[in-house]
Structure formats: C-alpha cells, structure tokens
Length: 159
Image (tube, rainbow, N blue to C red; front, side, top):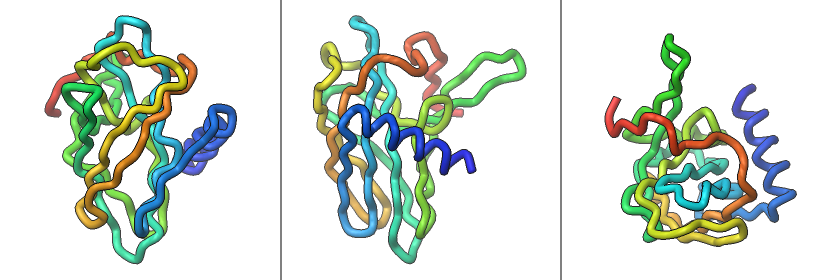
C-alpha cells in the first residue's frame, strides 16, 4: 500500500513538474527527479518510480552520473534515538509485474560530491544499471525545493 501511495504522490508531483518517463524493454523509469538542494549543498537525493513489466524480477545494482563524484543506492532507517540514518544498499529488487518507488524517507539514489549548483528545471544525465535490463540512460529533472534535507544526515557507506 505504501508503494501505491508513494507512486501516486510521485505521479501527482510529476504532473505539476512536467513528469517524464523512460522505457527500455520491460523497465520503465517514472519521473526521475531531484528536489532542488540548498545552493551550497554537496549532496542531493534522487527519486523515481521503477516499473518492471517483465515476467522475471530485475535488480537495480548501480547508478552512474557525471554531475556527482558518487551515486549510491540508499535507504533511510530511523534509530531508536529518532535519528534518521542512510544505509547503503547493494541493490534494489524490482519484482516482475510490480512498481517500486524511490521516495523521501525510503529508498533513494544518494548523490554525493555534486560538481556544481543544481537548479530547479535542470535536466541532469545519469545511467541506471540493472542485472537483467543492463544500462538505462535517464535524465533527472530538478524539481522545486522541498522534501527531506539530506545535507545533515549520516551518509555512512555501509550498514
């Protein structure tokens, strides 16, 4: 249910921010986006919906981009102390016939070491790497500022 609600929220936000999608084979990437980070931010988070229309599960295992020194798959976990922490993921399972949503306070692409300012309306290239589908070229749309500020969170590289 959370995935359905998250996808609906992403699609509604995308409608306002000129949603876009990329389809390659059985994989569709729905509105890859980055909320505009603060002007001097060195990190940002990327979100999207990923639909697998195939008969077999696939797995997102990596992200490459020229606008950040590092792009990693992360999830957000809240400790007993209430502090949110980023946990590195080796991959994200995309079940057959299902949609997985990368969203604030959940799974996301963590972009660290931004090469320059990221402004609302920018279109930033990236490549998603899947075990089955291979390399899928996408463009992150920089949406209006808002959502979770990742600048002050623990971005540990391994759980």
